[in-house]
Image (cartoon, rainbow, N blue to C red; front, side, top):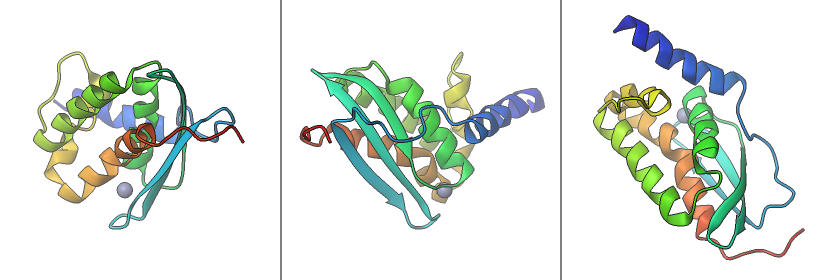
Amino acid sequence: MSDFDDLYRDIILDHNRRPRNRGRLPTANRVATGDNPTCGDNCTVHLRVEGDRIADISFEGSSCAIAQASASIMTTRLKGKTAAEAKAAFADFKEVVTTGNVPEDEPEKAAFAGVHAFPARIKCATLGWHTALEALNQPDKPPA
Ligand code: ZN
């Protein structure tokens, strides 16, 4: 198992050090901010929604390694997805972090399975996802 544990830790460290899609999104038409006071995490997700599809996505904020890595992976998962697909993807991810069930062939999700043993950390791992779905539910805002 230790090779797997190393792999999972590397995935989280990599996304924490080099977060994908981090920063503002000038073309965004939806935005939401979420926070996790027990850890001190906060996260803002910017979406460019075209029709029913997430055409582009970014996040920013300051958070612990788990929250940042999870938000980074979330952006790579949700880009190009429809609202229904995004909700299904979050349900799958939430299942992993709350049950600890390790999905086969899904190392990016499996990396977070260990979080289930630490209930306070589940909020860290799901903050970015919650915030993205909240942004999806926002009305379109006029371009800045
Ligand atoms: Zn945290």
